[in-house]
Structure formats: C-alpha cells, structure tokens
Length: 208
Length: 356
Image 1 (spheres, rainbow over the protein chains, first blue to last red):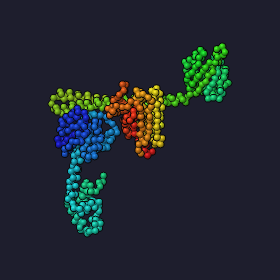
Image 2: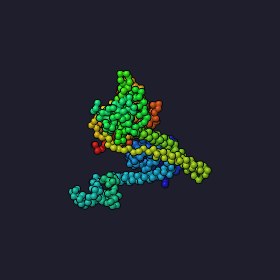
Image 3: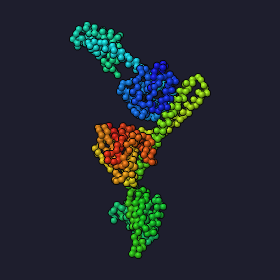
C-alpha cells in the first residue's frame, strides 16, 4: 500500500496512547497527526489526502460518537476506526450504524490496528474518487443551457424524445438536437451513462 | 369471647401437665382439633410435634414462674400444616396470689409473616444485584484505566520491533516478551469483564407509581430508623413505562438513601418528596427531592463519575451506576439544588410504546 501518501489522524486524550500509536503507524510508513481533544480535530484544516480517523470513544470534551455526528453534519466524510476501553455493545452498534469501519477494544494488536486503518484508508480513497467524479459531472452540468438542462432532466426521468417534444410543443428534430448537445457536453457515450450522471449530480433522485 | 378471630384458651395451672379447660371456636379452627380432642389434654401438645422444643421449654419456664409470655412461633395444625402463631399467655391468680389458671390468646399471623418474608427476599435480591453491579462497575472502570497504558506499552514495543527490523535479534526477543506479557494482562482483563458482564435489562411494561411504592416499602425500616418521612405526589394518570424492575428499584433506592444521608446532618423535618409527572408525549419524570444539605456547586460536575464520593465510607459508585442504568433505559439522570435548601435528583424514562 502506498501509505506514504495517506494520513492517519488519532484522537485520544491519553498522551501516551497517542504517542505510542503514532510511533507504531509511522514505523509502518503512515503520516500521523494526533489530537488530545475532539475540538482540536474539528478545528484542524484537513489535508486533501486519503485519510482515516482513529478515534477514542471516551473523550473529555465531546465523546467520540458525538464527534462522529459532528463530522457527518459538516459532511466531512472520513472513515473512523473507534478504539475503546470498554467493549460496550450499544455504543459499538451506534458507532457502526454511523459508518465506523471497525471497533477495537484496548489493548489491540498491531495487526488489528493496521488491518482496520488499511481498510479505512481504502474506503476513503474510493470516497475521494467518487467525490471527484461527482464534482467533474457537476462542472459539466454547469455548461448546459437552460433548455438543455431541462431536456437532460426529462431524458433522465425516462421520457422519450417524442414525448418531450409534445410536452414542450416543439418538433421532434429540435429536441433531438438538444439531446445530442447534452450527450456531448456531459461526455456521455450511452443513454445509461447519461442517466447515471444525472443521479450522481443530483438532477434526478438516486435510486439508493 | 367464643366468636373472635383470636384463639382463646384457659389452662389449669394446678394440675400436672397444664390441661386445657376451655378453648373457643377460633382456637379449634386454628389448631385443627375439635373441642372434644382438646379439653383435658396438655396445652403443650397443641403447638404440633415439629414446634421448636427450645421455644416450648422457654414458654413453660416463663409461665411456671408466674410471668407472662409474649412471642411468635411456628406451629403445626392437626393436619401438619404450618402457621405462625403470635402468642400471649398470662397467669390468673386467686385472692392469695397463687396462680390458678393461665389464660392465653393466639393470633394466626401467617399472612403477615409471608408478606414480611417476601419483602425481605426482595430486599436481599436487590442488595445482591446492587453489590454485583458495584463490583462490575468497579472492575469495568479499573479495566478501562489499565487498558490505556497497556495499549501504549503494546504499541511502543511493536513500533520498536518494526524500527529494529532485521537487526538486534536479542532486543527483538525482549520486545516480543514484553508484547506477550502485555497480552497476558489483556487476557486477564477480558476474562474479568466477561465474568462480570452486565446482564441486559429485562424490559417490561411497569407502572412507575407502583414501582416507587414497592421501593418505599423495601426501605421503610431504614426510613424509620433514620427518622425520615417519605412523601409521594403521583400523577395517577401516567401511562406505563418500559423498564427493568430491579434495575429501576436500584436507582430509586440509591437516590432515596442518598437523600437519607443528606438529611442526616440537617435540622428540622427529615422529609423526602418523590414526585412523578409527565414531561412530554413520550417521557415521564421522576423526582426525588430532599431538604438536606444540598450539593456544593463545584461537586455537581463530578457527581456522576466513578469513585467520586463525599461520604467517608462511600465507594463513589451509586450515582455512576444509577446514571448508566437510566441511560440504558433511554433516559437521563440529573440533579439540581433547590432554591430554598436541599437537592432534587430527577430522571426521565420512556413511556411504554403500546401506551402511546
């Protein structure tokens, strides 16, 4: 794994735990940034690198689960590996429901930590790729004219060119021209691809 | 005399063997013998063969000295059935002061005794659960404290191993010993945790007012000894809640006995008020209010943490456990000082969904 280009954030109020985990992860080639309070992590300006968060549940200011919620509210999508002194079941259920990658009960072995961190960073890479694609599609959508955007929306809804023409009160040929331009500007090779772009750009509701 | 519910009997004090000369109807039904089987026979036969012989001798001894006897004993009917007998026997003297007869009254108190036993059992069960709960909480917070440095040690050693990769085989070996022993401690903690695993609450539909009344009954003796009066102000229209009876009793008991302690040092009436009220469509509030010494403001944030106590013989577990029980029930346990004096602990609890 090209762990050099990824960063692991650690939030734990125990200084020694922070230092030890940091040393261990650095010894395996990760960049590491540690925080002793959840607030400090929230205030930190995140680097645009594949990353993950190793997060202690019991923190003095706001607890790990609350930090998970705060991150979700800010739409900061960073995979979380929870570490905890108590292996509390209701807590782990809540954490996993919130999208945590893993739940490690202290003390945990190097293998468990590296597996979880590796998995979390892998997940973040996919998230970043998806996010980049969505931005790219949204940029393309911005190049459409108002008329083209409307045709795009109706096509994406599954309407045939004939139906659109009737609805718009124009001839079929005009709609076909708009539609061709939409395909071109959106760089879609097929209709299926165009429809998936519409979902990713939030033009039609996602199926999920 | 013939038709009271108390059994009445008269014994001839001057004949040998204390023969019975009179019994009423209630005595016959209590013992299960008919009058014809009783009269003329020794009174002491009618406790039943399994009656405690030491107690029988004590009664004989007491009345032979011309003194009154008053006590409770387990008796057996003619058919062998047990009953609890509350017994009073007094001597009757003639003009010369000689004891001529004994007159006795006995009451069947079996039902009362059973009720008391039931309360004792409940109290015992609750105490046991509380003790186990305290131990579990203690172990769990201890385990937490220990697991922090264990995590650090394990990671330091593993980081060092990585840093020394393919070098210093002797040092590598030492590091692996450290790692092994760290994991040994971790294993011990894991086993301890399993051993004292908190049982999941048994959620049932409960009436909160009934539950409070039952709890007050359990602690009634304690209240009397400590000279405290527990008053209640219930909203009788409340729907049932969803909870574990024993765990919630544990919380209530803890809050009430904290109030007892707070009242100990205070002057005036020692009164605790327990109120139930509705908070909103889904939750109720239970308040335990006392007029005791209150809580110093600087202690309030620490009050619910483990090992925090202001009592010389306290463990600092009660409120931490109570809060974790209430939170497991989906509620919150809080405290505020009253404007006049004393403090009020209050918790919210969810209404049983079927009642919504």
